[in-house]
Image (cartoon, rainbow, N blue to C red):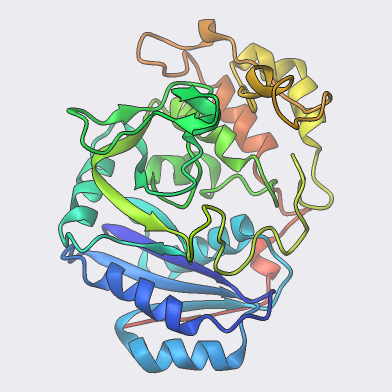
Amino acid sequence: MSLLIVYNACGISGRENSSFYIRNIRTILNQNLEDKRVVFSGCQISRRTFEEVYREFGEDISYYLTNERLAVNQSFNHAVLRGVQEFGKFDGYMYVASDVRFTDDESSLGRLHDRILQPDMGIVSPEIDKDNGYFWWFGFEEEQNLFDVFGRDEDFVVPLGTTANLHTAIFSNEIFEAYGNVLPDIFVSYCTESTFSFLAAAVRQSFVVANDVKYSHGEGEGVHQGLDGQTLAFGAAWDRVFPGSRTVKEIVEDPEAKACGFGHEEWVPKFIHKMDVPDDKTFLIHDPEQFDENSFSVDDRLKRFLAKNLYLGPTVLDYNRINSRFIRGA
């Protein structure tokens, strides 16, 4: 199989957003990449919302539904696992937030897909027009973001220890194989993206932002206009983790974290005295000596560390026991 695309919707807020879901999913289906499977992932959505979406798309897409209390990291991961059970493994697994719209350029998804087929590509993201997070990591002057990728001569290879906000991205099968899933599922609020460059480097791949694809994010004028709301399952907080898992502070202070090259929230030293950032905000600067000239991990220690510490084991969250339903499309 080629590409599994999971469109993620959450109904915890009680909003009825089916018209937005239908519009945004249609922009995915309008892409001319033939070998793709689209899954509508609905976590605690209402019956009415599901019926509206199903009435529109029927068997053109598949559906993952759960009423469990899960953050999107876990519900997306479970949708991927169920999709793999139904269809087999894919070349790539694409996360799409509910408020993301693909461009009218119908070949744009194919260009992203072509990149994930390259053996050194681990995470491929389009440019996002709002709330891409670049201000925290690259090219900023006061509060004016001066950094962009779209239209450059080359893709932007995200340097180790930096990242971009996750609104949509494709993750390689190598990442899925290495960690047994896609998104680090200890996180239930912020900070997931901080791990991305390391997830890729540990399997000798890169995280890139494409220079020729830009997708739209958000409803309304503000950059944080989350369609379904944000961090609703467990609340908003730095480094908040799934109940029962090891804390981020414990992970970062493990001597093996520094030894294997792990880093976390490396933007903090730049901002802690400039903005409203707590003095005790957890961060770790990675050791560049643990990576080669391609910024790939020099050995398997980082991969083992990430698999053990950033992904939940079955004693904390057993995906086989999550109450869910998967409706397979044609």
